[in-house]
Every structure is written in C-alpha cells, then in structure tokens.
Image (tube, rainbow, N blue to C red; front, side, top):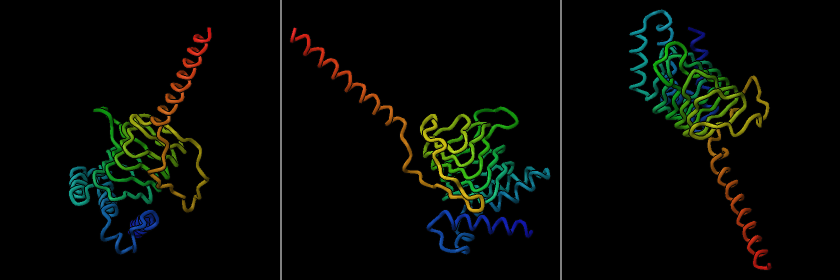
Length: 225
C-alpha cells in the first residue's frame, strides 16, 4: 500500500512539474483524468497479472468511460507518466512505457494487425508523444526522443531523436542537452520542430531557380552568336 501511495505522489508531482495549469496536489488528484486512469490501470494491471482478465478489462473500460483514456490492463507503465488532457489516448495490451514519459491527447500506441505476442511499441524513458501521434508496431522508441503532432511512426526510433511526418521520419538526432538522472529535463515543445516537407520544397525551389538561371544564360549566349 505504501508503495502505491509513493507512486501516486510521484505521478502527481509529475503533473505539477509539466503542466503550468496545475496549482496544487489536491487539484491534480481530484480533477486530472490522467491520475484517475493511472490509478485504475494499476489496479487492473495487478488483477490482469493474477488471471482476473474479465474484471481487469471491466475496470479499464470503466476508466475509459470516465476519463476518455483507454489503457489495456496488460500494458506495462513506468513511473511518472503524464497524459495531458488525455481524451482519445489509446495504449495497447503489449505496450511498454518507461519512466518520465509524456503523452498528449489523441495519441495511439497500437498494433498493425492480428499477430499474436508482442505487437505494440516499447517507449523508452523521457519520451514525448505529441497530440494525435500514432506509434504502431512492436518496435522501440528510444530514450529522450520526441514524436511530433500527427506523426505516424511505423519503425524503430533511436534514442535522442525527433520524428515528424506521415510516415514518420527522423529530423533531429543527438542534438539534445544532457539530462539529469534525478530530475529529467523534459522538452515539451511541440511547435518548433523541423518540417521535412518544407525543407524538400525549399531544395526544389533553389534547384528550379538554378536551372532557370542556366537557361537564361544559355539563351543570352545563343542570341550573342
């Protein structure tokens, strides 16, 4: 019981640390669906591991009804998970989530088919999964990585990377500051992310301008002849 209370206190502290709207522990405990869903999941997960599958699923579905967050009781969740707002978040049965992970509304940690066994992602420590992102498949998202809003990630992500786009592409790697082990510096910025499509369009624009200049110079030489 003491262990559960300690874990709950850590979860509440994580919300206070990452959400500027949170003003007190009491407010977080009473008003944050993230906390309610995690409490329910811990109970359901314990029952699921003891073979009470139907009861565990019932608890998880009740939590889904009241919070809008669906966490399968088989999922393994680490310490200090923060699900901001949470409506529409789905976490599949074989998902594994590390410590200090932040998930925003509408994100899905799901599978890609009807295969048995491990079919959902493994999320490393200190990962940020932005609004509407879909991480689908039995691969790992490395520590300290960030998944941009609306991205669809279908393959493994190394540590210290930023992924954006559909399908998701790595646009930043190892360009992060060293994080403290005791209190990780979690980068929650979902706006100032590179745009690979815009970068490609800019390259094409420059190439077209270069070709137009070459054609213009060729026409001038022909006129001179």
